[in-house]
Length: 310
Image 1 (cartoon, rainbow, N blue to C red):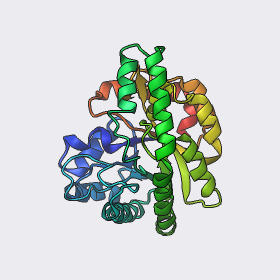
Image 2: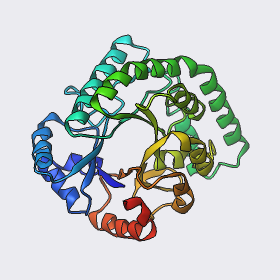
Image 3: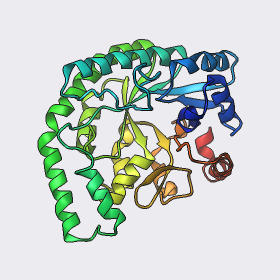
Image 4: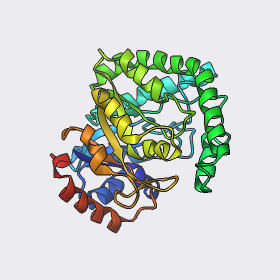
C-alpha cells in the first residue's frame, strides 16, 4: 500500500484542505497525517476527510502539535526524559494523538520513544557523521570513536529503555480503544531509544500484544548503515516478525535522507524482500523535494514494485 506523509507540504499551507489537495494532485489518495500540524489546519483536514477526498492510513505523534511548540518538533517532549513532568506531558500529548487517529480512522500511530539524555547528538552520532562526510570512515580515529560511542550507549541506555517500556505499557489500552497499532519507529541517531538491541527486546516484550509493532524508516536505518552501525538488509530480516510498515525515502551519501526514491543509494530490490504487499509504504519526503520529481519517482516505483500498490 502506497501512502504519503503531510510532512512534505505542511509548512507551506495555512489551510488543511489545500494541503491535502496538493498531495492528491501527486496521485496519492492515502495519507499519513504527520507531526508539526497546527490546530488551525484541522478544520480543513476534517472537511477533506468528510468529503472522502483521502483515506488516513496513519498518524505521526504528536498530532496536532502541542500549542506552545512553535516549530515542527516531534521530539519536543520525550518519554525518556529525566524530568517526570516532561514524561507526563509526552504521555498526555500522545493520548491526544490517539484521539485524532481514531477520528480519522487511522491504522497506526508512529512513535518516537526518546533518547539517552547524557549523550548529546553533536558529540556522538553527529561527530561520527562529520568524520564520515570527510572520508575518514576507515581511519583509526573513526574506529576508536565509534567503539567509544557504543560503549557509552550500552552503559547509559538501560534506564531510558525502561522508561520507554513503562510508557508503552500505559499506551496499550488507549491504543486498543482507538483501534490503532503503536508503531515504534527506527531512528537515525545511535543515542535515540530504542537502539537495535533494545528494539528487539521491546518487540519481544510486547510479542503477545497486537497493539505494538515495529515501524521501519528506510532513511534512518540507511544512515546507520552508512555509519557502519548495522547492515540494513540483515536488520530488516531480523525484524520481519514485528514489521508493520515503513517510511519510504532515499539516502544520498553520506548523511542526506528524506530524498525522493531512486535519487540516492538505497538498494530497494534487496530491502523490500522483508515486506508484505498489504504493509503501508508511506513516502516521507523533505519539503524541498519538487512535485515533478515525486511524480516521476512514483511512476517508476509502481512499474518496478507493482505488488506494493495492492
